[in-house]
Every structure is written in C-alpha cells, then in structure tokens.
Image 1: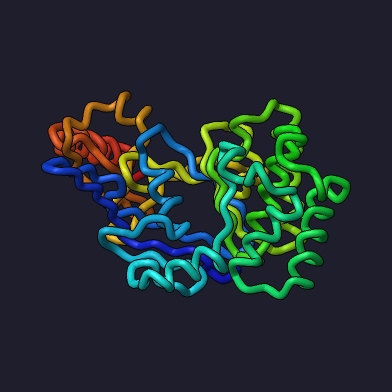
Image 2: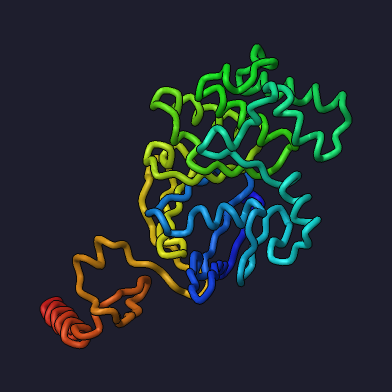
Length: 299
C-alpha cells in the first residue's frame, strides 16, 4: 500500500467576522496516498476551496489535525508556513492571471519560485528549461503570457507550480477557462506528470469529466467528506464513514425515505440497517414473522 501523503482528521475551519461565525469545515476526514490523483467535488459552499487553502498553507485550521508529507499544518510558525508553501506544495489556479506574471517571460516565470527558494542560478535555468520541455513549451521560453494561448498558459502554470519539486500539486478548477479539447489535453498532461514524477494531485472541480479522469473522487457536503467513487472498471459510489462513525446518507435516499431526522441502527449479521425510528419496531416484527414462517415451512 502506498504511503499516505495527505491526512486530516476531524478538521474544522471557522471563519469569524464581527458577530458572525461561518463553519466551513465540520470535522472533515481525508486520506490521500502518495501518487494518487484525487478530485474534490460537491456544491458551491461545501468546503472544497477551504480545504484546498488549508492544504496549500494559505489558511490555518481552527481545530483537528492535518498533515501533508509529515508536516503538521496546525502548528506552523510564520516562517515554517512560508517554507512549506515553497517546498511541499504547488498551486494551479483557474484564473490564468494568478498563475503567471505578465511582465516576465515564461522561462523567468518558472525560475522565480526557485529564486525565492534559493536555488543556484545554473540549476534554475536548467530545471526551468526541462520543465517547460516536459509540458510541451520548449519552444516558448522567451514568450510572455500575452503571446500564449489559454492552454499554453495553463501548461506554463503547471511548470511554475512544479518548479521547486513539490510532492503535492493542488489545482482549483484548472480547466474552468479552457474549451473541451484544450481541457482534455490539460488532463492528459496531468496524468503523464503523475506517472513520470510520482506526483500526488488534488483537483477541485465541478466538471464530471475532470473528476472521472482522476483515480478517485470524494464528494464534500456541509463541510464533511460524504461519498467517494474509485474510478476503475467497477466504479461505484460508496458512503464515507469518518473516524467517529459519522456518515452522510446520499440525498436521493433521504428524499425517498422519511427518516424524520432520526434513525434506528440495527446490526444484522454482516451488515448494518438504518430504519426510520417511528417504523423500526413494526417493520422488524414483520421481518421476524416472515422469517419464522419460512423456517416453519422448511421444517
């Protein structure tokens, strides 16, 4: 089994403004093995971008535990957080203007993170040139962003994000401003980088095609992980049970069965049944009666 690179347990994030409190994460659990490509999906306001900001060292948790590559993100000094952002994680944003500096060439854009991290000049140029070749922009080194297409800008953004050899890449709607053909090329590039560099990738997306291109997708609802799908030949959605036994019943099931806010839990051999609290005794009795009748018939 691959080593776990990202792990959070009972992660909480509360934003406070004057007398208002907004709970963005409500005890979220997540484990991401090294080398996995993971999609975070869910409705707007569910907590996806909040989680991405915490994993990226741009925000700090209010409570709980969160570790990336052995770094505890809940106990970082200001300098440690800065070093974490430079060395452990790379970002690609949906807005191309956030990824590239408009007055620098593509080569200088990729070398800038290495300059800030203290790489020697010779290594900066050699690595930036190799990264740009790797993302298919080896002939665009001296171009400024304005001379690049949207797809080329996003490929350049990937090179910038990977400049300091981070083990984790975070991408927030990386195909949101691209047409379908260019988006497919960007996803193919992410997959090849994952294979070639052993890169762990977490993508926030609303696009089901992007989610399906990942190894696994995890849905976040109301600040907690809700369901997941492993994208293999037998892809099937499963409910996530967190470390204290909480789960979120999928919305179609809640709409189909009136639980009234309460349920009885019944251990039935090798599985667990959830019954609406007000019908459990009656339905269980019916089940026992049917079983008894069947048993009598067999005898």
